[in-house]
Length: 311
Image 1 (spheres, rainbow, N blue to C red):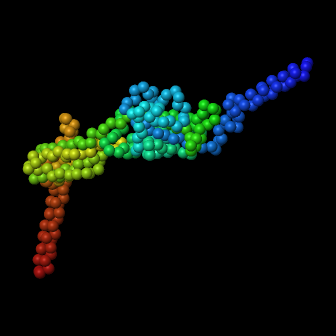
Image 2: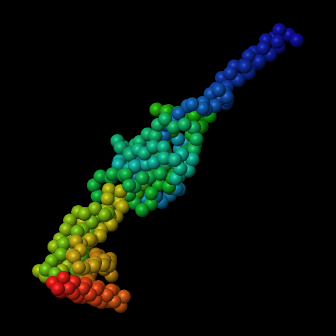
Image 3: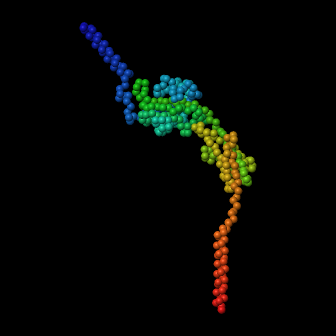
């Protein structure tokens, strides 16, 4: 073998080594780098995206190019997409109704961060009751299905999303609708028996008294409470009921109106109870006769005693 061929072989081997070394970081990740530490914690950054509708968006999913990295909202979801502040989310461990780990509310561009999470499976669920949307907006009937996240989440290069700027990002989608702000509630009074001069009726919102009215002949024993809030900030309808100060000697019954717009309150007079005449039992009467007879005998005996004493 000539010196030229030996040199050529050495150069070929050296070139192969250089190529292997150069490619190694991109083709393998050491077990130490890829293995999640048992005491490691992770963050989930959630951004709630507002869309006009959810057509074309699979439940809980996005487009193929997304793998957990931060997204440009308009570029990815479309020019009409935006974010929503004031929506509360719960994160549960292991299942959608499992142990509650944290509750956070979106703000500053529809964002919130669930932090300090151990490795494991988590479910992110909307909490309508704690949501506080601005203006007349309310959550649509279709809410994001529970998002399932298995921590740690693996990046395309085999490493993990971790915390802070390196946290995994999720993007649930939501449609909003305008709240029907106001409603009304009607009460009507009916009598069975003697009618009184007036009666006070209290209006309750979810069981709490918020207003009252005096019903009488002048208002024809009925009233409609107007301009009542129809729903809370989370879009959940309030329940309105009426309750009166029941007068003595009457009972009260409550019945929903046929058109579901209010309540009919009926007062029924309770007839007074007649006093009962005591009945003398036969045995008791005999005792009375015996006592009377004994008193007479005592009186006669005393009189006889006095007369004999004089003689």
